[in-house]
Length: 251
Figure 1 (tube, rainbow, N blue to C red):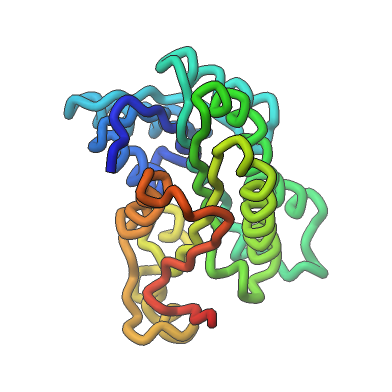
Figure 2 (cartoon, rainbow, N blue to C red):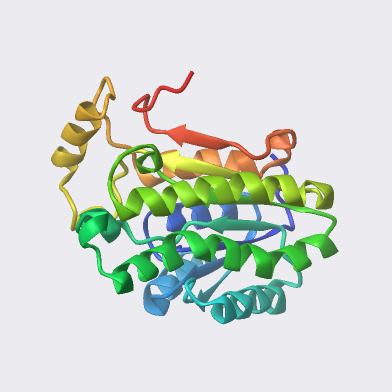
């Protein structure tokens, strides 16, 4: 895969899958923008990358704010001169613990939809003009196998990510900008630990249909996303890929 000299913005990159994306891309000579609402943690990830010879900066972003998303992209271009890749990874896993839709407060509904779904559009709208200047680019969005399940507002928000990805892929194809999404299953991340233990994740995976009950580490998911950003995936566009150890079987 040839990534040398490219620039990527990754949201939700202060930990978990976002941090895994940042590290994997930096190892491929991509300059990475570690974008997160938690600037302190983002700076720690960026520092770990620069300490090993990579190029990285940390940027604070509230992905639920269109203006903050624009400022994030502007900071990336200011730091590295261009933008080639966008990974829309930020999200609220805590949404899976919220009340059922009929009991959900409107404030919580709007907050989850803003961070989990609307942010994909906000960041993409901010990134597209810069990608056009480079003759194209690639975007990977983080969905979830929950988008095909009944887990309340979390499912609704991630189903929205799926259809946003498909529609953006169609409308941006003429600009040579590809858009795909990854739908992870159980992943051992910091964001999951307050929700369930690794043992509970394994049990949930088996109950959901996975044969082994295996729980993935963040890099197993991010590796697929890195491939989708690469030139080797040049003819892959508008797809939602379950990366779940065979939990969801779609024919």
